[in-house]
Image (cartoon, rainbow, N blue to C red):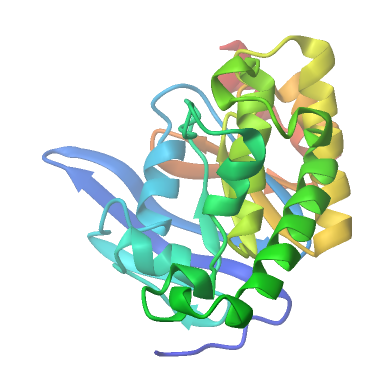
Length: 256
């Protein structure tokens, strides 16, 4: 594995480019996501935001450029391998095991020696780990605000709760960086703010970083440490939320 010193950066991309035929979906995109931060990625529909996350997490392979995660060059790695080293993502439509309870959904994401068919025969070797996993799962559910719903089947949860369950499952896997695709999409404004409050709490409690795609910037901006603005496959602006609000390029993109 090629390693590069990132000086406090958890994710770095350089000149990331992706084409679909004659369409340039990503045009030399370079970003830096600092450790223990919430980085917001905004822009109009078709700007290339989801494509960018797909390339970073291995769903798509880039045509050019580099993806460096936690000092490791992961360019072109398959999704399972990216996930295994701590870079997880959630989707616009949550995909939990709907018939399992909230707690079981979180436990499924954790590694257990009891899953090994040989070690499973020796209960003493893994029963303590199982108990520790349950304790860890409840701590995560408390952080995401689902501890009161631990015994609910996932299909009974609301839209916002399902999105937080996806976050819980990613945290249970040991993720260092979570890429969230519209975590407040389809939720009411009151619960949307609570989701970002939870992300801020998680960031502080677990030293986890987030890169968040979001359209509802009126809610999301105040929780972000840094914002990147995309349009037509390119980064057209970046900076602190206060700087982005004053940027004429951003106003042109959103207001025309």
